[in-house]
Length: 304
Length: 304
Image (cartoon, rainbow over all chains, first blue to last red; front, side, top):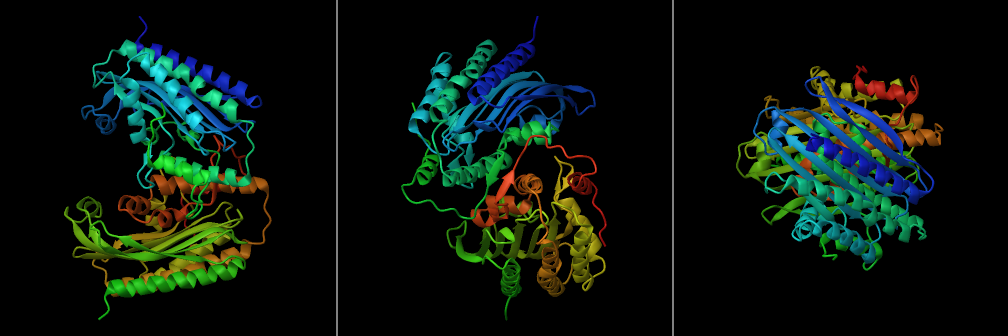
């Protein structure tokens, strides 16, 4: 019988392939390169591996990374403890698909999604989420993104979307800026471990959400990709990408976890945008689209 | 009688002014703007303040920040404990000068320096350091930078430079990259607290090092500022600036301390370069200047 880890791993690989094909079609110019890698576990043995797919310098996408991994080994007690497990070395296996898309045009939002399944000792759980980070805020796009996520969640439980939406607003938050990273989406973790949820249903949820990604993002890209933009708007985008880097390096648990457990550096940091700026104390005119975005990030809104 | 905190504060302000004048002269185009700020302490009272000076878009310097601060208040027990003090709320005062210079040309190195004096409860100490981050490595420049630092340290104790040089190599290290941030310099902390060193001598050390900054850096700028460079070399500089951001956001204690204690965000993050790139898995030809730099960062060298 095929284990849940194997089935999840096959699912996430299929989702990766599905997403890359869809994004290549939208871009119309660049293709995803494939970088297969394997991992040595802390104990020196074979620890699984992954397939990192990167599209760079496309017509629409400046940098897009879609990573699949399926790793296993022994998790040091110190990290197991951080995941709420007992403080001893534990066998683990983890598989997931993780992506970050940075379009070139500031009229297009950056987006991130990640769906994963972990086993640690005698525990197992699902985690995941997707969020949208616009530079210029179109309410219509935010509503579309959230609506598709809500529909996929609602198929499984009406309680999911409101709970995961709130979790997302709380997780993707930069305390030193008093801002969320973007206009949210969903985030969940430890499902099927702490809450007794059925693993088959959670597998189906991950499948539906993974395949919903293109529906939630591609229509926005199609709608906005031909919009003209100015150098000033591009400049603002690069400044806002700075916030993205601040979140990922200062707060993101996945990034810290990967770096501290000897994950593959280039696959972990593929989430960082190609070009980024930090200017001292930028000021935006009251009522401008730039000020309006920042205001929206200070007070999470209900989009559906 | 003037307290040591007041004298150190006056000294650091004088060093700030001295450095800004010297850099304006070298740049020959842009001037430092002044941004005076005040701070509210955790207890709601006045908590001191500072003067942030920023030069942007100069002929030589793309972004240079020189910050002076003199702050005081009550340090929460959780932070006092991280500084090795007892776990209770403690009165503190801290003053320092801190700078990061990002030149436009990749032939010019980025540099950082910071000298500070802290009092926490009944303890008091000095900390500081300066380091150099070249994009293209000229041995002559690295030797010059270290020689000036060594001479300033040697005036006070022959033991200082070797100890502080090693401390710097250990502190400015990115474990996930297996690289130092640059070719080092000096770093020291807790002097006069743990080692019984005389505070007047440490004050004199901070003064000599603070005023030595221009001697250690300006001659390098003068020597290299007219060197031509290509778009590819500029590209490499932006990639390497990414490492600078990684260090400051992932590891720098000063940055974390500032962000967690409600420091002034824009003054803390003025250390980040203006323009930065992250490319997936960049590869540099063996024996190229780019590969030679990275090699040098993997094995700290003795420069004097």
